[in-house]
Amino acid sequence: MSDEVLVSAERVFRFYGQYCAVEDLSLTLRRGEVLGMLGPNGAGKSSTLRMLSGNLAPTAGRININGIDLLDHPKLAKTHVGYLPERPPLYPDMSVDEYLRYCARLHRVPRARIAAALNEVKTRCGLIDAGRRVIGNLSKGYQQRVGIAQALIHSPLIVILDEPTVALDPIQIREIRALIRELGRSHGVILSTHILPEVQAVCDRVQIIHAGRTVFNDTLTGLGERHGSIGLIVAFRAPPAIAELYQLPGVEGVEPLAGGRLRIVHREAKVAEAIVKASVDRGWGLYELAPERTTLEQIFMDLVHREFDTDGVKTNPMRASA
Amino acid sequence: MILTIAGSELRRMFYSPLAWAILAVVLFILGLIFLILVDNYLNVLQPQLVGAPGAPGVTDIVLAPVLFWAGVMMLSVTPLLTMRTFSEERSQGSLTLLTSAPLSITEIVLGKYLALLLFTLVLLGLLTLMPVSLVAGTTLDWGKIAAGFLGLFLLLASFSAAGLFISCQTRTPLIAAVATFGLLLFLVVLYMSGSAQGTASELFIYLSHFGHFLSFLQGLFDSSDVVYYLLFSAAFLILTIRQLDNERLQR
Image (cartoon, each protein chain N blue to C red):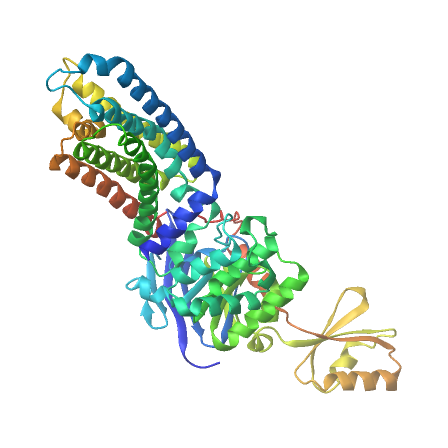
Protein backbone atom coordinates (compact mmCIF):
# COMPACT_ATOMS: atom_id res chain seq x y z
CA MET A 1 0.00 0.00 0.00
CA SER A 2 1.36 3.43 -0.85
CA ASP A 3 0.46 6.74 0.64
CA GLU A 4 -1.07 8.05 -2.54
CA VAL A 5 -4.64 9.01 -1.71
CA LEU A 6 -7.05 8.08 -4.49
CA VAL A 7 -10.36 8.99 -2.93
CA SER A 8 -11.01 11.33 -0.11
CA ALA A 9 -14.44 12.34 1.07
CA GLU A 10 -14.78 14.93 3.77
CA ARG A 11 -17.81 15.37 5.95
CA VAL A 12 -20.31 14.27 3.37
CA PHE A 13 -24.03 14.57 4.08
CA ARG A 14 -26.92 13.43 1.99
CA PHE A 15 -30.56 14.15 2.65
CA TYR A 16 -33.57 12.73 0.85
CA GLY A 17 -36.11 15.33 1.82
CA GLN A 18 -36.12 15.22 5.60
CA TYR A 19 -34.51 11.81 5.81
CA CYS A 20 -30.78 11.83 6.31
CA ALA A 21 -29.27 8.87 4.49
CA VAL A 22 -25.62 9.72 4.99
CA GLU A 23 -24.45 11.80 7.90
CA ASP A 24 -21.02 13.32 8.31
CA LEU A 25 -19.17 10.61 6.46
CA SER A 26 -15.46 10.87 5.83
CA LEU A 27 -13.48 8.35 3.90
CA THR A 28 -10.05 7.87 2.39
CA LEU A 29 -8.83 5.25 -0.02
CA ARG A 30 -5.17 4.79 -0.82
CA ARG A 31 -3.61 3.11 -3.78
CA GLY A 32 -3.27 -0.62 -3.21
CA GLU A 33 -6.06 -0.82 -0.70
CA VAL A 34 -9.38 -2.61 -0.60
CA LEU A 35 -11.88 -0.79 1.56
CA GLY A 36 -14.96 -2.66 2.68
CA MET A 37 -18.13 -0.80 3.52
CA LEU A 38 -20.18 -2.87 5.83
CA GLY A 39 -23.59 -2.14 7.16
CA PRO A 40 -27.10 -3.50 7.55
CA ASN A 41 -29.65 -2.88 4.82
CA GLY A 42 -30.51 0.77 4.44
CA ALA A 43 -27.42 1.95 6.29
CA GLY A 44 -26.47 4.35 3.50
CA LYS A 45 -23.87 2.22 1.74
CA SER A 46 -25.40 2.53 -1.70
CA SER A 47 -26.03 6.23 -1.32
CA THR A 48 -22.39 6.71 -0.35
CA LEU A 49 -21.14 4.75 -3.32
CA ARG A 50 -23.46 6.61 -5.67
CA MET A 51 -22.01 9.85 -4.40
CA LEU A 52 -18.44 8.63 -4.80
CA SER A 53 -19.18 7.56 -8.36
CA GLY A 54 -20.67 10.94 -9.22
CA ASN A 55 -24.22 9.67 -9.68
CA LEU A 56 -25.60 11.57 -6.76
CA ALA A 57 -24.53 14.96 -5.48
CA PRO A 58 -23.91 15.22 -1.75
CA THR A 59 -26.04 17.73 0.12
CA ALA A 60 -22.88 18.97 1.83
CA GLY A 61 -19.24 17.99 1.85
CA ARG A 62 -16.37 17.49 -0.58
CA ILE A 63 -15.29 14.50 -2.58
CA ASN A 64 -11.89 14.29 -4.22
CA ILE A 65 -11.07 11.67 -6.80
CA ASN A 66 -7.36 11.36 -7.45
CA GLY A 67 -6.95 15.00 -6.46
CA ILE A 68 -9.79 16.23 -8.68
CA ASP A 69 -12.90 17.68 -7.12
CA LEU A 70 -15.80 15.52 -8.20
CA LEU A 71 -18.34 18.32 -7.95
CA ASP A 72 -16.33 20.94 -9.82
CA HIS A 73 -14.94 18.71 -12.57
CA PRO A 74 -17.22 15.69 -12.77
CA LYS A 75 -16.18 14.71 -16.28
CA LEU A 76 -12.50 14.67 -15.48
CA ALA A 77 -12.92 12.94 -12.14
CA LYS A 78 -15.16 10.22 -13.57
CA THR A 79 -12.48 9.07 -16.00
CA HIS A 80 -10.65 7.53 -13.04
CA VAL A 81 -13.63 5.65 -11.67
CA GLY A 82 -15.19 2.34 -12.59
CA TYR A 83 -18.55 1.79 -10.94
CA LEU A 84 -20.77 -1.23 -10.58
CA PRO A 85 -24.10 -0.17 -9.12
CA GLU A 86 -26.37 -2.45 -7.14
CA ARG A 87 -28.12 -3.45 -10.33
CA PRO A 88 -25.66 -3.91 -13.16
CA PRO A 89 -26.41 -1.29 -15.84
CA LEU A 90 -26.87 -3.64 -18.78
CA TYR A 91 -28.68 -3.46 -22.08
CA PRO A 92 -30.38 -6.85 -22.35
CA ASP A 93 -30.67 -6.72 -26.14
CA MET A 94 -26.96 -6.24 -26.81
CA SER A 95 -24.33 -8.95 -27.02
CA VAL A 96 -21.59 -9.01 -24.40
CA ASP A 97 -18.86 -7.94 -26.82
CA GLU A 98 -20.92 -5.16 -28.29
CA TYR A 99 -21.92 -3.90 -24.87
CA LEU A 100 -18.38 -3.88 -23.51
CA ARG A 101 -17.09 -2.18 -26.65
CA TYR A 102 -19.74 0.51 -26.19
CA CYS A 103 -18.68 0.95 -22.54
CA ALA A 104 -15.06 1.28 -23.62
CA ARG A 105 -15.96 3.98 -26.08
CA LEU A 106 -18.09 5.83 -23.53
CA HIS A 107 -15.05 5.87 -21.27
CA ARG A 108 -12.90 7.19 -24.09
CA VAL A 109 -10.64 4.19 -24.41
CA PRO A 110 -8.59 4.86 -27.58
CA ARG A 111 -9.97 2.91 -30.55
CA ALA A 112 -6.73 1.00 -31.06
CA ARG A 113 -6.79 -0.17 -27.44
CA ILE A 114 -10.39 -1.37 -27.37
CA ALA A 115 -9.81 -4.90 -28.68
CA ALA A 116 -7.02 -5.53 -26.19
CA ALA A 117 -8.99 -4.04 -23.30
CA LEU A 118 -11.98 -6.17 -24.23
CA ASN A 119 -9.91 -9.32 -24.25
CA GLU A 120 -8.22 -8.55 -20.99
CA VAL A 121 -11.39 -7.76 -19.11
CA LYS A 122 -13.17 -10.82 -20.50
CA THR A 123 -10.34 -13.06 -19.36
CA ARG A 124 -10.37 -11.50 -15.93
CA CYS A 125 -14.09 -11.88 -15.44
CA GLY A 126 -14.41 -15.30 -17.04
CA LEU A 127 -16.43 -14.11 -20.00
CA ILE A 128 -14.28 -15.45 -22.84
CA ASP A 129 -16.93 -17.91 -24.00
CA ALA A 130 -19.83 -15.53 -23.53
CA GLY A 131 -18.71 -12.78 -25.93
CA ARG A 132 -21.28 -13.41 -28.62
CA ARG A 133 -24.17 -14.14 -26.34
CA VAL A 134 -27.00 -11.69 -25.82
CA ILE A 135 -26.92 -10.25 -22.32
CA GLY A 136 -30.63 -10.78 -21.71
CA ASN A 137 -30.17 -14.54 -22.13
CA LEU A 138 -27.32 -14.83 -19.65
CA SER A 139 -27.83 -16.13 -16.14
CA LYS A 140 -27.84 -13.67 -13.25
CA GLY A 141 -24.30 -14.63 -12.28
CA TYR A 142 -22.98 -14.01 -15.76
CA GLN A 143 -24.82 -10.71 -15.94
CA GLN A 144 -23.12 -9.72 -12.71
CA ARG A 145 -19.77 -10.58 -14.29
CA VAL A 146 -20.57 -8.42 -17.28
CA GLY A 147 -21.41 -5.66 -14.83
CA ILE A 148 -18.01 -6.05 -13.18
CA ALA A 149 -16.30 -6.20 -16.58
CA GLN A 150 -18.00 -2.94 -17.48
CA ALA A 151 -16.47 -1.28 -14.42
CA LEU A 152 -12.97 -2.46 -15.33
CA ILE A 153 -12.88 -1.97 -19.10
CA HIS A 154 -11.10 1.37 -18.98
CA SER A 155 -8.70 0.12 -16.25
CA PRO A 156 -9.68 2.88 -13.82
CA LEU A 157 -7.60 3.84 -10.83
CA ILE A 158 -10.55 3.47 -8.53
CA VAL A 159 -13.06 0.67 -8.69
CA ILE A 160 -16.31 1.03 -6.81
CA LEU A 161 -18.36 -2.13 -6.47
CA ASP A 162 -21.79 -2.19 -4.86
CA GLU A 163 -22.35 -5.72 -3.57
CA PRO A 164 -20.29 -7.38 -6.29
CA THR A 165 -20.79 -11.00 -5.27
CA VAL A 166 -24.55 -10.89 -5.03
CA ALA A 167 -26.23 -13.63 -7.10
CA LEU A 168 -22.99 -15.51 -7.76
CA ASP A 169 -22.45 -19.16 -6.94
CA PRO A 170 -19.71 -20.12 -4.43
CA ILE A 171 -17.10 -20.82 -7.09
CA GLN A 172 -17.79 -17.55 -8.86
CA ILE A 173 -17.67 -15.75 -5.52
CA ARG A 174 -14.17 -17.12 -4.94
CA GLU A 175 -13.08 -16.06 -8.39
CA ILE A 176 -14.48 -12.59 -8.02
CA ARG A 177 -12.93 -12.18 -4.59
CA ALA A 178 -9.57 -13.22 -6.00
CA LEU A 179 -10.09 -10.68 -8.77
CA ILE A 180 -10.87 -7.95 -6.24
CA ARG A 181 -7.74 -8.82 -4.25
CA GLU A 182 -5.70 -8.64 -7.42
CA LEU A 183 -7.22 -5.29 -8.35
CA GLY A 184 -6.51 -4.06 -4.85
CA ARG A 185 -2.80 -4.50 -5.41
CA SER A 186 -2.45 -1.95 -8.18
CA HIS A 187 -5.65 0.10 -7.91
CA GLY A 188 -7.91 1.16 -5.11
CA VAL A 189 -11.15 -0.72 -4.54
CA ILE A 190 -14.18 0.25 -2.51
CA LEU A 191 -16.81 -2.40 -2.13
CA SER A 192 -19.97 -2.56 -0.13
CA THR A 193 -21.44 -5.68 1.29
CA HIS A 194 -23.50 -6.96 4.13
CA ILE A 195 -21.69 -10.29 4.12
CA LEU A 196 -19.16 -10.27 6.95
CA PRO A 197 -16.86 -13.08 5.78
CA GLU A 198 -16.51 -11.27 2.48
CA VAL A 199 -14.96 -8.30 4.20
CA GLN A 200 -12.61 -10.57 6.11
CA ALA A 201 -11.70 -12.37 2.91
CA VAL A 202 -10.85 -9.44 0.70
CA CYS A 203 -10.58 -6.14 2.54
CA ASP A 204 -7.59 -4.41 4.08
CA ARG A 205 -9.74 -1.94 5.90
CA VAL A 206 -13.33 -1.91 6.97
CA GLN A 207 -15.68 0.97 7.53
CA ILE A 208 -18.88 -0.01 9.27
CA ILE A 209 -21.81 2.26 8.57
CA HIS A 210 -24.98 2.28 10.52
CA ALA A 211 -27.94 4.59 9.98
CA GLY A 212 -25.79 6.83 7.79
CA ARG A 213 -22.96 7.23 10.27
CA THR A 214 -19.53 5.66 10.42
CA VAL A 215 -19.38 3.61 13.60
CA PHE A 216 -16.12 1.79 12.98
CA ASN A 217 -13.16 2.43 10.72
CA ASP A 218 -9.96 0.44 11.06
CA THR A 219 -7.69 -2.05 9.35
CA LEU A 220 -8.52 -5.68 9.83
CA THR A 221 -5.17 -6.31 11.52
CA GLY A 222 -5.78 -3.54 13.99
CA LEU A 223 -9.11 -5.08 14.78
CA GLY A 224 -8.11 -7.62 17.42
CA GLU A 225 -5.98 -5.20 19.35
CA ARG A 226 -8.54 -2.48 19.61
CA HIS A 227 -11.59 -4.37 20.61
CA GLY A 228 -11.90 -6.33 23.82
CA SER A 229 -9.22 -8.29 25.59
CA ILE A 230 -7.90 -11.64 24.50
CA GLY A 231 -9.47 -14.65 26.11
CA LEU A 232 -9.37 -18.41 26.32
CA ILE A 233 -12.37 -20.64 26.64
CA VAL A 234 -11.60 -23.70 28.78
CA ALA A 235 -13.56 -26.58 30.23
CA PHE A 236 -12.49 -29.03 32.94
CA ARG A 237 -13.92 -32.35 34.10
CA ALA A 238 -12.94 -31.49 37.70
CA PRO A 239 -12.92 -27.69 37.73
CA PRO A 240 -10.63 -26.09 40.28
CA ALA A 241 -11.64 -23.18 42.48
CA ILE A 242 -11.62 -19.90 40.61
CA ALA A 243 -9.09 -18.46 43.04
CA GLU A 244 -6.71 -21.24 42.06
CA LEU A 245 -6.84 -20.16 38.43
CA TYR A 246 -6.06 -16.59 39.37
CA GLN A 247 -2.76 -17.78 40.80
CA LEU A 248 -1.54 -18.96 37.39
CA PRO A 249 0.90 -16.48 35.83
CA GLY A 250 -0.68 -14.06 33.38
CA VAL A 251 -4.33 -14.64 34.26
CA GLU A 252 -6.23 -11.41 34.69
CA GLY A 253 -9.77 -12.57 35.05
CA VAL A 254 -11.94 -15.67 35.14
CA GLU A 255 -15.61 -15.73 34.22
CA PRO A 256 -17.81 -18.79 34.45
CA LEU A 257 -19.82 -19.40 31.29
CA ALA A 258 -22.76 -21.64 30.52
CA GLY A 259 -22.13 -25.41 30.27
CA GLY A 260 -19.37 -25.47 32.86
CA ARG A 261 -16.95 -23.55 30.62
CA LEU A 262 -14.73 -20.80 31.89
CA ARG A 263 -13.51 -17.72 30.10
CA ILE A 264 -9.99 -16.79 31.10
CA VAL A 265 -8.88 -13.27 30.29
CA HIS A 266 -5.16 -12.84 29.90
CA ARG A 267 -2.47 -10.68 28.38
CA GLU A 268 0.21 -13.19 27.44
CA ALA A 269 -0.11 -16.10 25.09
CA LYS A 270 1.86 -18.34 27.46
CA VAL A 271 -1.19 -18.73 29.68
CA ALA A 272 -2.47 -21.65 27.62
CA GLU A 273 0.67 -23.60 28.34
CA ALA A 274 0.42 -22.83 32.03
CA ILE A 275 -3.17 -24.00 32.15
CA VAL A 276 -2.38 -27.27 30.41
CA LYS A 277 0.53 -27.91 32.70
CA ALA A 278 -1.43 -27.11 35.84
CA SER A 279 -4.30 -29.28 34.65
CA VAL A 280 -2.00 -32.27 34.15
CA ASP A 281 -0.19 -31.72 37.44
CA ARG A 282 -3.28 -31.22 39.54
CA GLY A 283 -5.71 -33.53 37.72
CA TRP A 284 -8.33 -30.94 36.58
CA GLY A 285 -9.16 -33.00 33.50
CA LEU A 286 -8.93 -30.28 30.84
CA TYR A 287 -10.96 -31.34 27.79
CA GLU A 288 -11.46 -28.11 25.92
CA LEU A 289 -9.15 -25.19 25.28
CA ALA A 290 -9.88 -22.64 22.58
CA PRO A 291 -8.61 -19.15 21.95
CA GLU A 292 -11.31 -16.55 21.77
CA ARG A 293 -11.09 -14.22 18.78
CA THR A 294 -12.79 -10.92 18.33
CA THR A 295 -14.41 -11.46 15.03
CA LEU A 296 -15.69 -8.77 12.81
CA GLU A 297 -19.11 -10.18 13.38
CA GLN A 298 -18.84 -9.54 17.12
CA ILE A 299 -17.79 -5.97 16.54
CA PHE A 300 -20.48 -5.49 13.98
CA MET A 301 -23.21 -6.83 16.23
CA ASP A 302 -21.80 -4.88 19.16
CA LEU A 303 -21.78 -1.58 17.31
CA VAL A 304 -25.06 -1.95 15.55
CA HIS A 305 -26.88 -3.11 18.62
CA ARG A 306 -25.39 -0.48 20.83
CA GLU A 307 -26.74 2.09 18.38
CA PHE A 308 -30.17 0.59 18.57
CA ASP A 309 -30.10 0.60 22.34
CA THR A 310 -29.07 4.20 22.72
CA ASP A 311 -31.50 5.47 20.14
CA GLY A 312 -34.35 3.47 21.55
CA VAL A 313 -36.49 1.51 19.17
CA LYS A 314 -35.66 2.58 15.69
CA THR A 315 -37.64 1.43 12.73
CA ASN A 316 -35.54 0.18 9.90
CA PRO A 317 -35.00 3.26 7.75
CA MET A 318 -36.44 2.97 4.31
CA ARG A 319 -33.94 1.96 1.75
CA ALA A 320 -33.08 5.14 -0.10
CA SER A 321 -33.20 4.54 -3.78
CA ALA A 322 -34.31 7.35 -5.99
CA MET B 1 -19.28 11.05 -27.84
CA ILE B 2 -22.72 12.20 -28.94
CA LEU B 3 -22.25 10.16 -32.10
CA THR B 4 -21.19 7.09 -30.10
CA ILE B 5 -24.33 7.26 -28.01
CA ALA B 6 -26.54 7.98 -31.01
CA GLY B 7 -25.07 5.06 -32.96
CA SER B 8 -25.60 2.62 -30.15
CA GLU B 9 -29.11 3.91 -29.47
CA LEU B 10 -30.09 3.61 -33.11
CA ARG B 11 -28.73 0.09 -33.30
CA ARG B 12 -30.62 -0.90 -30.16
CA MET B 13 -33.78 0.58 -31.62
CA PHE B 14 -33.51 -1.79 -34.54
CA TYR B 15 -32.76 -4.77 -32.27
CA SER B 16 -36.29 -4.60 -31.00
CA PRO B 17 -39.05 -5.48 -33.39
CA LEU B 18 -40.78 -2.22 -32.50
CA ALA B 19 -38.80 -0.06 -34.92
CA TRP B 20 -39.35 -2.50 -37.77
CA ALA B 21 -43.03 -2.80 -36.98
CA ILE B 22 -43.40 0.96 -36.91
CA LEU B 23 -41.63 1.40 -40.24
CA ALA B 24 -43.68 -1.37 -41.81
CA VAL B 25 -47.05 -0.15 -40.59
CA VAL B 26 -46.43 3.51 -41.33
CA LEU B 27 -45.14 2.84 -44.82
CA PHE B 28 -47.90 0.37 -45.61
CA ILE B 29 -50.63 2.80 -44.65
CA LEU B 30 -48.99 5.78 -46.32
CA GLY B 31 -48.45 3.63 -49.39
CA LEU B 32 -52.15 2.85 -49.52
CA ILE B 33 -53.05 6.52 -49.12
CA PHE B 34 -50.58 7.38 -51.86
CA LEU B 35 -52.12 4.77 -54.15
CA ILE B 36 -55.67 6.02 -53.54
CA LEU B 37 -54.63 9.60 -54.21
CA VAL B 38 -52.80 8.71 -57.41
CA ASP B 39 -55.75 6.65 -58.57
CA ASN B 40 -58.16 9.44 -57.77
CA TYR B 41 -55.98 11.92 -59.61
CA LEU B 42 -55.69 9.82 -62.74
CA ASN B 43 -59.30 8.80 -63.03
CA VAL B 44 -61.26 11.70 -61.62
CA LEU B 45 -59.32 14.91 -61.32
CA GLN B 46 -56.98 14.92 -64.31
CA PRO B 47 -59.72 14.99 -66.96
CA GLN B 48 -61.43 17.90 -65.18
CA LEU B 49 -58.28 19.92 -64.73
CA VAL B 50 -57.00 19.61 -68.26
CA GLY B 51 -56.69 23.03 -69.79
CA ALA B 52 -57.71 24.90 -66.66
CA PRO B 53 -55.28 27.79 -66.09
CA GLY B 54 -53.33 27.67 -62.79
CA ALA B 55 -54.70 24.26 -61.90
CA PRO B 56 -52.99 22.40 -59.02
CA GLY B 57 -50.54 19.71 -60.12
CA VAL B 58 -49.69 16.26 -58.91
CA THR B 59 -47.46 17.68 -56.19
CA ASP B 60 -50.36 19.54 -54.60
CA ILE B 61 -53.00 16.90 -55.08
CA VAL B 62 -51.04 13.76 -54.30
CA LEU B 63 -47.85 14.47 -52.40
CA ALA B 64 -48.91 17.24 -50.05
CA PRO B 65 -51.75 15.10 -48.61
CA VAL B 66 -49.39 12.13 -48.24
CA LEU B 67 -46.99 14.24 -46.22
CA PHE B 68 -49.88 15.64 -44.21
CA TRP B 69 -51.07 12.14 -43.38
CA ALA B 70 -47.52 11.15 -42.51
CA GLY B 71 -47.51 13.96 -39.95
CA VAL B 72 -50.87 12.86 -38.55
CA MET B 73 -49.75 9.24 -38.28
CA MET B 74 -46.51 10.13 -36.63
CA LEU B 75 -48.50 12.03 -34.03
CA SER B 76 -49.51 8.68 -32.62
CA VAL B 77 -46.40 6.73 -33.61
CA THR B 78 -43.63 9.03 -32.33
CA PRO B 79 -44.67 8.44 -28.71
CA LEU B 80 -43.99 4.74 -29.27
CA LEU B 81 -40.49 5.54 -30.47
CA THR B 82 -39.61 7.98 -27.77
CA MET B 83 -41.24 6.20 -24.84
CA ARG B 84 -38.28 3.90 -24.25
CA THR B 85 -35.46 6.41 -24.44
CA PHE B 86 -35.20 7.30 -20.78
CA SER B 87 -37.98 5.50 -18.97
CA GLU B 88 -36.81 2.05 -19.97
CA GLU B 89 -33.21 2.82 -19.11
CA ARG B 90 -34.36 4.02 -15.78
CA SER B 91 -36.48 0.99 -14.97
CA GLN B 92 -33.62 -1.28 -16.08
CA GLY B 93 -31.09 0.75 -14.14
CA SER B 94 -28.92 1.09 -17.22
CA LEU B 95 -28.98 4.88 -17.15
CA THR B 96 -26.23 4.61 -14.53
CA LEU B 97 -23.88 3.43 -17.25
CA LEU B 98 -24.18 6.77 -18.98
CA THR B 99 -24.24 8.88 -15.84
CA SER B 100 -21.12 7.31 -14.39
CA ALA B 101 -19.19 7.58 -17.63
CA PRO B 102 -17.23 10.80 -18.19
CA LEU B 103 -20.09 12.43 -20.09
CA SER B 104 -22.12 15.52 -19.49
CA ILE B 105 -25.88 15.23 -19.27
CA THR B 106 -26.08 17.39 -22.39
CA GLU B 107 -24.10 14.82 -24.35
CA ILE B 108 -26.37 12.03 -23.17
CA VAL B 109 -29.56 13.87 -24.09
CA LEU B 110 -28.26 15.06 -27.45
CA GLY B 111 -26.99 11.56 -28.24
CA LYS B 112 -30.39 10.07 -27.66
CA TYR B 113 -32.11 12.87 -29.55
CA LEU B 114 -29.78 12.43 -32.50
CA ALA B 115 -30.66 8.74 -32.61
CA LEU B 116 -34.35 9.66 -32.86
CA LEU B 117 -33.61 12.17 -35.62
CA LEU B 118 -31.65 9.54 -37.53
CA PHE B 119 -34.59 7.19 -37.28
CA THR B 120 -36.83 9.95 -38.59
CA LEU B 121 -34.45 10.41 -41.51
CA VAL B 122 -34.66 6.71 -42.30
CA LEU B 123 -38.43 6.99 -42.39
CA LEU B 124 -38.34 10.12 -44.55
CA GLY B 125 -35.79 8.47 -46.84
CA LEU B 126 -38.23 5.64 -47.46
CA LEU B 127 -41.05 8.13 -47.98
CA THR B 128 -39.13 9.94 -50.73
CA LEU B 129 -39.48 6.78 -52.79
CA MET B 130 -43.11 7.81 -53.39
CA PRO B 131 -42.44 11.03 -55.30
CA VAL B 132 -39.49 9.39 -57.03
CA SER B 133 -41.82 6.71 -58.37
CA LEU B 134 -43.91 9.42 -60.05
CA VAL B 135 -40.97 10.85 -61.96
CA ALA B 136 -41.44 8.28 -64.69
CA GLY B 137 -44.86 9.62 -65.64
CA THR B 138 -44.89 13.31 -64.88
CA THR B 139 -42.91 16.37 -63.88
CA LEU B 140 -42.85 17.36 -60.24
CA ASP B 141 -42.34 20.59 -58.38
CA TRP B 142 -39.23 19.55 -56.43
CA GLY B 143 -39.01 22.80 -54.52
CA LYS B 144 -42.46 22.22 -53.08
CA ILE B 145 -41.61 18.63 -52.24
CA ALA B 146 -38.41 19.66 -50.52
CA ALA B 147 -40.30 22.24 -48.46
CA GLY B 148 -42.86 19.59 -47.53
CA PHE B 149 -40.22 17.11 -46.43
CA LEU B 150 -38.33 19.74 -44.49
CA GLY B 151 -41.57 20.67 -42.74
CA LEU B 152 -42.29 17.04 -41.92
CA PHE B 153 -38.76 16.57 -40.61
CA LEU B 154 -39.03 19.62 -38.38
CA LEU B 155 -42.45 18.50 -37.18
CA LEU B 156 -41.14 15.06 -36.26
CA ALA B 157 -38.07 16.57 -34.64
CA SER B 158 -40.35 18.59 -32.39
CA PHE B 159 -42.43 15.48 -31.62
CA SER B 160 -39.26 13.63 -30.66
CA ALA B 161 -38.01 16.38 -28.38
CA ALA B 162 -41.33 16.45 -26.55
CA GLY B 163 -41.35 12.66 -26.31
CA LEU B 164 -37.81 12.61 -24.96
CA PHE B 165 -38.75 15.03 -22.23
CA ILE B 166 -41.80 13.08 -21.18
CA SER B 167 -39.92 9.79 -21.25
CA CYS B 168 -37.53 11.32 -18.79
CA GLN B 169 -40.36 11.93 -16.31
CA THR B 170 -41.36 8.35 -15.68
CA ARG B 171 -40.06 4.83 -15.27
CA THR B 172 -42.86 3.21 -17.24
CA PRO B 173 -42.55 3.42 -21.03
CA LEU B 174 -46.29 3.03 -21.51
CA ILE B 175 -47.08 6.02 -19.36
CA ALA B 176 -44.51 8.01 -21.29
CA ALA B 177 -46.20 7.01 -24.55
CA VAL B 178 -49.66 7.95 -23.36
CA ALA B 179 -48.50 11.27 -21.93
CA THR B 180 -46.57 12.17 -25.07
CA PHE B 181 -49.53 11.33 -27.24
CA GLY B 182 -51.70 13.46 -24.99
CA LEU B 183 -49.35 16.43 -25.26
CA LEU B 184 -49.07 16.20 -29.04
CA LEU B 185 -52.81 15.83 -29.43
CA PHE B 186 -53.34 18.76 -27.11
CA LEU B 187 -51.31 20.94 -29.45
CA VAL B 188 -53.51 19.87 -32.34
CA VAL B 189 -56.58 20.74 -30.34
CA LEU B 190 -55.03 24.13 -29.70
CA TYR B 191 -54.85 24.63 -33.43
CA MET B 192 -58.47 23.64 -33.85
CA SER B 193 -59.66 25.90 -31.08
CA GLY B 194 -57.47 28.69 -32.40
CA SER B 195 -58.96 28.47 -35.87
CA ALA B 196 -62.54 27.85 -34.76
CA GLN B 197 -64.95 30.63 -35.58
CA GLY B 198 -65.65 33.03 -32.75
CA THR B 199 -62.79 31.91 -30.53
CA ALA B 200 -60.08 32.35 -33.11
CA SER B 201 -56.83 33.25 -31.47
CA GLU B 202 -53.56 33.93 -33.21
CA LEU B 203 -51.66 32.84 -30.12
CA PHE B 204 -53.18 29.38 -30.08
CA ILE B 205 -52.45 28.93 -33.74
CA TYR B 206 -48.90 30.03 -33.20
CA LEU B 207 -48.40 27.63 -30.32
CA SER B 208 -49.70 24.57 -32.15
CA HIS B 209 -47.18 22.78 -34.31
CA PHE B 210 -49.57 21.77 -37.06
CA GLY B 211 -50.25 25.31 -38.17
CA HIS B 212 -46.60 25.75 -39.04
CA PHE B 213 -46.48 22.44 -40.82
CA LEU B 214 -49.35 23.34 -43.15
CA SER B 215 -47.53 26.32 -44.63
CA PHE B 216 -44.59 24.08 -45.49
CA LEU B 217 -46.97 21.80 -47.35
CA GLN B 218 -48.09 24.72 -49.49
CA GLY B 219 -44.48 25.16 -50.43
CA LEU B 220 -43.97 28.18 -48.24
CA PHE B 221 -40.61 28.33 -46.58
CA ASP B 222 -41.14 30.85 -43.82
CA SER B 223 -38.18 31.27 -41.50
CA SER B 224 -40.53 32.07 -38.61
CA ASP B 225 -41.94 28.55 -38.95
CA VAL B 226 -38.45 27.09 -38.87
CA VAL B 227 -37.65 29.17 -35.83
CA TYR B 228 -40.81 27.91 -34.13
CA TYR B 229 -39.74 24.29 -34.52
CA LEU B 230 -36.18 24.97 -33.46
CA LEU B 231 -37.41 26.78 -30.36
CA PHE B 232 -39.92 24.07 -29.59
CA SER B 233 -37.30 21.32 -29.83
CA ALA B 234 -34.60 23.25 -28.00
CA ALA B 235 -36.98 24.10 -25.16
CA PHE B 236 -37.85 20.46 -24.56
CA LEU B 237 -34.23 19.35 -24.81
CA ILE B 238 -33.15 21.95 -22.30
CA LEU B 239 -35.96 20.89 -19.98
CA THR B 240 -34.79 17.28 -20.27
CA ILE B 241 -31.22 18.21 -19.43
CA ARG B 242 -32.37 20.27 -16.47
CA GLN B 243 -34.55 17.45 -15.26
CA LEU B 244 -31.73 14.89 -15.33
CA ASP B 245 -29.34 17.30 -13.70
CA ASN B 246 -31.83 17.94 -10.94
CA GLU B 247 -32.21 14.28 -10.31
CA ARG B 248 -28.57 14.01 -9.39
CA LEU B 249 -28.90 16.94 -7.03
CA GLN B 250 -32.25 16.37 -5.43
CA ARG B 251 -34.66 13.67 -4.33
